[in-house]
Amino acid sequence: MQASSENEPAIRIEGLCKRFGSRTAVANLDLDVAPGELFSLLGPNGAGKTTTIKMLCCLLRPSAGTASIMGHDIGNDPLAVKRVIGVSPQETAVAPNLTARENLALIAGLHGLDASRARARTDELLEVTGLTQRADDKAKKYSGGLQRRLSVAMALVSDPAVVFLDEPTIGLDPQARRGMWEYIEGLKGETTIVLTTHYLEEADALADRVAVVDDGVLVALGTPAELKARVLGEPVMIVEAVGVTDDALGALLDHYPQAHRVDGGIEIPGEDVSVYEVGDCLRPFDVEIRSTSTKHVSLDDVFLELTGKELRE
Amino acid sequence: MRSTELATRNLREVLRDPVALGIALALPLVLLLTLQALGGDDAPFLTPTRLTPGIVLFGFVMVMFSSAMILSRDRETSLFARLLTTPIRSEEFVWGYSLPYLLVAGVQAIVLTVVGIAVGLSSEGSPLLVALMFALMAVFFVALGMIFGSTMTVAQTSGAYALVLMLTIFGGAWFDLEEIGGVFVTVGDVLPFKHALDGSRAIMADGAGFADVATDLYWVGGYAVVAVVAAVIVFRRRMYE
Image (cartoon, rainbow over all chains, first blue to last red; front, top):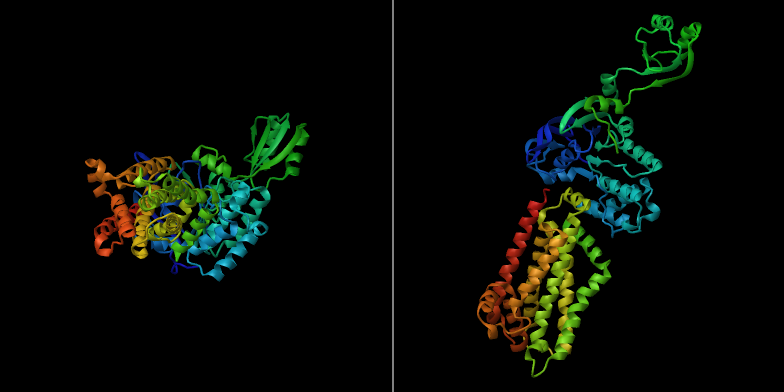
């Protein structure tokens, strides 16, 4: 694995643009990703995530702007860029007539790993992805989920400094997805990872920072906690209740000034709302409390707030 | 070495499709045995010495088609995008895709020549000179396959195959171009096929030496070099989507 020089970002993007005719897929993107950071790109279909990754992997020429990976310019030195990256494309990318072991050896060989190192990495990744038992079966005989695991393993086999994972867990069952998360999490700090995903909880659980992109434009950038705080600020207790009179609400406002009536009950924003205290306030006024729940701000809320769209698979 | 890794993968693809490989090897052989059996005084063009070089050329066109198809098919998958993100150069890419098909072409030519000799093919001249002529033709056809595979869809590749097969008529594989004359001779002289067939027949039947067939070798070699350079240039452009 190679490291960029001290203080230099693993990925630096400056004014990156991609236009297809009159349509702008990526507009003037500026971004730095630190070495060892797990960075997530979030956006709906057509937002420009995959186009950005393709430019960074030297598969597409930018219309304007530039970027460097570990100090290597994507326009001037694509071979040097390709030596330090591993890529798992959005669609499963395996050679169907080769076995898992042969697929991994192929990519290791193309990255110049010597035979013994390639064997060691292959065995390690087969183990991590749970493919050891079927390592010598042709990939075309695998289920979609197994092919996906192999595809991700192929991105990691060369032990790259920067890994691009475009929807890495799509098609995986929950158990396999959890296993993949654990593995990706284990790479944090050592390997710089750029992850695009439709699973917002995936970005929430794994990413150090998240960039929300929509229509080719960077809409927001920050840690998941920062983004959530920016959008809605704090959790909200939802009290489903009948018979909330003005007096009852007044009693509650003495304790929680942000409480307000909504259809079917009351909402009380705040970090430290006590369900017992709420009950003590409302009970003297014969309010019938049917249920209480706390709504935490999720990246779904952030996404909806920032783009006006819901992110769906 | 990166091209060797890619060539190994592509060779596995060839060997793991035994039906296609069998057809590529068996069809020209069946054609040779059938046509030479029809030969005789009434059909002097169907002697093994006249037929074999033409059928080797026909076999190379089939190999060209196979090499174009694997590249064209790969281009339509995400695997190809993945391969393009590895540090492999365009010339290594072309070599990695070509090598397995050059091997198939070599085996095909050897089998046809050996069987041809068994049924009466003359072998007067230098086998090395014949091998050189066939090798240059094989390089030309496989490079042509790389160009088609780099630029065309799977369906378009089939059309290009039919077109090249038609153009080989100008090589004089199945009839004597001089007897027809006119545009057939003019076009035949410009394309490499007639030079390849005339040269290899002269070596086999008349024991012609290098000096005798130098012009034919240069024509075929020139086409091979141009095709290889063009394949690398075309591929280099294809390394970006």
